[in-house]
Length: 112
Length: 111
Image (tube, rainbow over the protein chains, first blue to last red):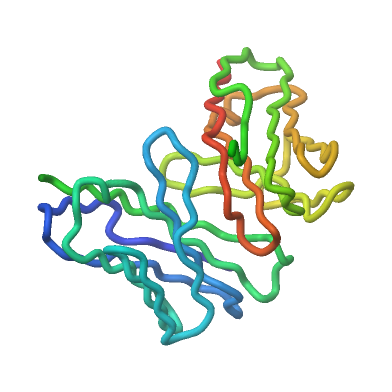
């Protein structure tokens, strides 16, 4: 069964303290891994798509990387405005085109 | 540029009542989705529509129906609400593949 897990469940960082969030997945064949940011009371905001092991994408202080079993979202020198819940999702080759499985998310708090 | 608009933002229902959640997008996207989000469980797909006139079941379709009225609008209907359907409901759209643009959600409580 397809599965997506994220760790840690919650992370508290001091401003400027770099860290990484983990997304582990179990699918029969990966057709894409996606990262989203979700602010309280809002819908998710799409950040990145990764398709193959070794691929990396960057946006401001965020960098997403992908291996065959997991993805990391690296946050370099975070600022308080990076506080949000970060969601990971995957699309499996054997499922219908638009079916995407989401993980439960990591809640990030960056303290000034 | 509105993006994806959901109405209502909040709703309280009694068990057995019915209601329709509305969603509209102004980006001319083909694909639209309905998700529910519950604490600790992540977003789960209820129904999706790959194009106008087509709909398909997601992971948790029981108790829900959908209508893709036209390319802009995709509605979700609860025919007989149950407490287990208390959740936050998100509509999303994309050109295909993964959902890219989400609305801000409808917070639904069923007593």
